[in-house]
Length: 431
Image 1 (cartoon, rainbow, N blue to C red):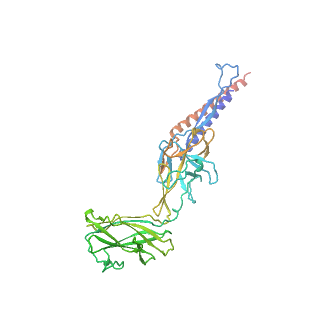
Image 2 (cartoon, rainbow, N blue to C red):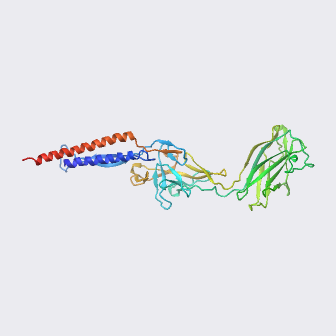
């Protein structure tokens, strides 16, 4: 039996060497979790045997226990490099492919965008996310409702401008012009005092340039404004607005009250609804509200104080942002930011019961318990840090020392076999 006892020691030392060698080999593997060989002693004792005089029969490998303590975070410049920080609990949920309902789990957060726009890891596994509303709120946190996160290459359909804000400061010291004698003429700078331009969009996403011509009249604190649209291109067209009594006019009159610091008179409507039909692009007729409410008249120079509008063209994907709560937002060339999904995090009552399947991924088992699904930063789930990766949790120095110890154990058990062999040989040589 002594040969068998020593052999179990050799097997145990070999297993320990293999486990530590695997840990050392993966010291630079992102998201890797080291393992520890756990052994038990072996006793062979009959029902009526005396336990006080029983001699053990060696050792046996009971378990290779995974160690799920968090690794260190390594900062990167890639927004698709993700790490679970904070409390450190949780796994990324991954789909092996687009047809498989099986779910894998990983701490390795090195992701890329593939040619179809899906966020995947280097093994081609798809990052799962919860569906969200436009404001980023999750519509369902059930794992069955999650989908592979995909970034649209464009920001969807264009949106025609319906609201325009333009606030300027008009110089109170400007020379007045009699509008009855000298109406505004875009081609003659002597007929207007100042001008500025903004860009709006039609229903097809085409840019349309609006130019505003301001004329200081010969009436104190009074200005006329006309708005032209460059449609068709190269041929400015004067826009009209509803006069409130069933007709249309093309000149907006602004009056200011010096007693209020040059603000618009209380009796002046700050908004007008302008229309433009028959666009050369074939788009739907433009109708937008132009808001002058921030316009002032002071002694300073003509200045554009604020300008804004709510239309946009179809945008192309230019950037990506993932916040600490796992909200994935795509940024587009038209200035739009679109909420795409919220990254799914998973956790288990017993992570050591997960089954390793390679590529730093695990499968759930009965031993791991039922998966718990949630959002980053809620409950026991850690926050997500973009631009960071969790390194291997293997302590290289400790593993190298353990490797030497395992080697010595192997040598010691080899010595046991050598000694048993010498004793056996002595017995054979007895005469």
